[in-house]
Image (cartoon, rainbow, N blue to C red):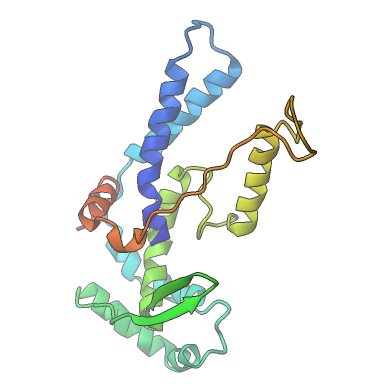
Length: 223
């Protein structure tokens, strides 16, 4: 899901960046401005490019085998993974036939509660469905990854929580001028800077699937 959820962010980010470049009143462009505009042009080219005939690649046995390896990562000893791997070729072939015949349907999600510390309801897929999800990601990730905004860190290669914290630290030092005290500071903690922490309530439950699919259709031409 995370591969798709970030897609919509790029369009707004690209438009803002282009607007900022167009505000430069000077006719003479610096190298930095030229590089920025070049980056936007390249990003827009990637955004406009569409892809078709992807479904056969999705259904290929090689793709499903790679998807299995990704789905079992760090889970090799779990019983349901061991059971699936016992008849790996048979299980992957069955999934492949269902995909080719377009009869594949995900199983109902398993619901459970976690507290870490906030109470959250989790809906988990069975293992064979996770294999299919990874098979889809194998196809979509190379298409969408290049056009994601830089500061999106969830479920992406070379990103994650630690990279997000490092990036936040960069912004923190920049905004606070590397810890420079305010003019009328009362103690050694009065530095300039503000942080906005926000969340969207029930984000995953309230995503409009029609809008999301229309966004995907801009690039993916397969039915």
